[in-house]
Image 1: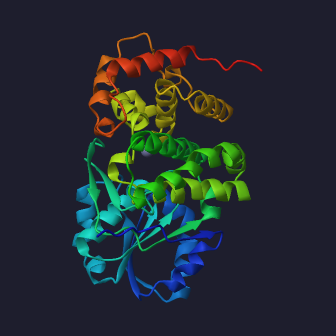
Image 2: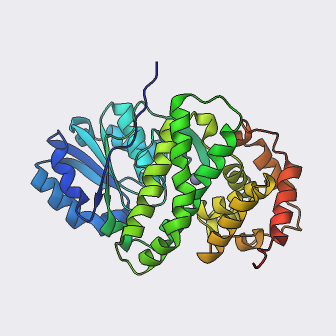
Image 3: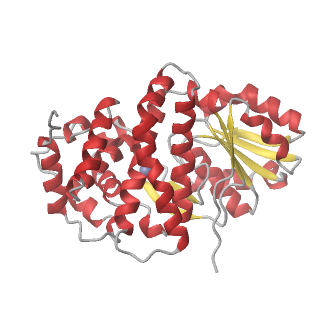
Length: 356
Ligand SMILES: [Zn+2]
């Protein structure tokens, strides 16, 4: 027996008006500082008209740590509240989801930026207080419902959408690669199919969405891109077997993070989008490589290692070793070794699209 929890969500410039469908009367509300500044007025008005009282509220902290989740768990207001509401980016949402799972309370999410699918998934990616990775916690349930206010997202710094586009495109490239050759059960088949949208959808309207977000305009292209980032990616995540969730693009990201400059100067999805190209090169996916490379160039996502301020001819053995040993490469159609990764990185550096 198994259960699949596909995302439930509301999107629009008035998405918070759907708070009135929450079947509870009290909540505890936690947010990131920037998210709160951008949304306070709309959130408070919508909760008031939905008749939901706030028993506790505050900034969740600055990192998705178990310590921050424990502060929520210890709060008398949260203990008394019928449900928890998270408002922010992935780290805030993952912290509140973690707390909600431990407290057996339903969690509602409001995505204030479109950068990850945390608002709909059943996992929390937890870190240590020094910002190093700690664990991926499997939760009992995904959030009850996700609210996506497109006006708030369109006003957020465009770099989050930009990186989110990169991370989303990787989802298809990695999941289809990891699952290749396997006999798939239905949820995995479903998730891999939805994953097509993550790549081909972005090729179609990703650049337009990026441009619209730069001028803070809510347009059909932007709405589609936001749903691709949060909902398509999230649907893949909640459907496919966990062994198909990632592959080289993310393994190389974790490898690259051994250099502190990577997380200091670059965003997750930005670095992952470089790894997508490396994976496509290694796997000799000529057509997709050409499409992704052209797309990355068009919106200034990285196309070579020097775009991440590293030199492909320097000693990269620490990065390659960490990438090779990463758990995302445990289930792939053929061994992805440090040598293979490095060869693809070198080839990518020299890659040029031939003019027709
Ligand atoms: Zn990612």
